[in-house]
Length: 348
Image 1 (cartoon, rainbow, N blue to C red):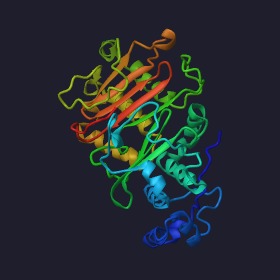
Image 2 (cartoon, rainbow, N blue to C red):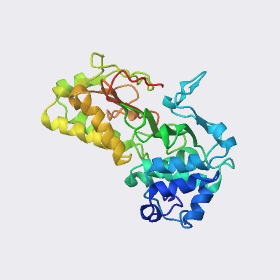
Image 3 (cartoon, helix red, strand yellow):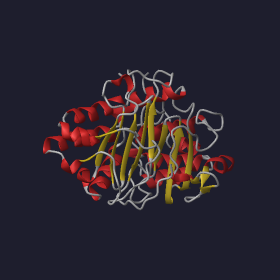
Image 4 (cartoon, rainbow, N blue to C red):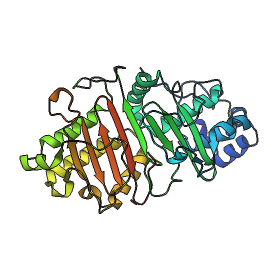
């Protein structure tokens, strides 16, 4: 399935002064209508925008009616009685608010803006693959997805959180200090719709990440494999940071050879690849701040070895404030938390 481009023009925003554009749009309670009047081609079909996703979040926020804001907008530090700090929540299958993006709760223009925001936080090379994941897991983007906006975009800290089956993604414009991706994220894929995949994980868009990790395992010598291989994995959502003195499964990357470390770097590259460049850069910066890959441990788990082929379906790369837990059995679930400070709290 081809990724459907949002109906927002590519060329109009660079030709306009941004402050003038958003000031004009903000004069109306229906900011999208005002924007369309100011720039008639803003919602022209089939052309993607160059605007930053955060700019689109501001435009979306300005377009919301009081009723819409009441349902999906929250103070920056809003706490849910059951879920805690809602903005930082991450889960495998949830909706942060009730209205789905494709519902009549949103106007068509608002739906396209949310699609454009999603489009903007995903690496363009991954648009097709993410479209497949969304189609397989939820019937297409928007069908199963919902959003929440925390804070007031354009006025202090703010963040849009996008959720759904196998989806927790964030657009924060660096409002969240010390963390990459705006906070913990989740991604996964069940391409067969049966919950249980075969050993080859055919059609799973995220399985190449595990292939890369298993190439690294094959590059370890016998002693190293013994250190890296662990019988049982931790609970998949167990991703709070352990700090520099924490106890980690597996082998410490600092003990590997230069060639093996280069393979670890390739695994990291594969892991962060699906996301926009600014988020990739922030993840790398956070990793370096805690000692780089040398401070991380890599573990492969015997439990969940589909097909008993010793191509390890469950594995984990973890450092003081870096957790990337890959659960490939019975299908792919991936839990991610990355920060430059292990005192950051993770709500999973």
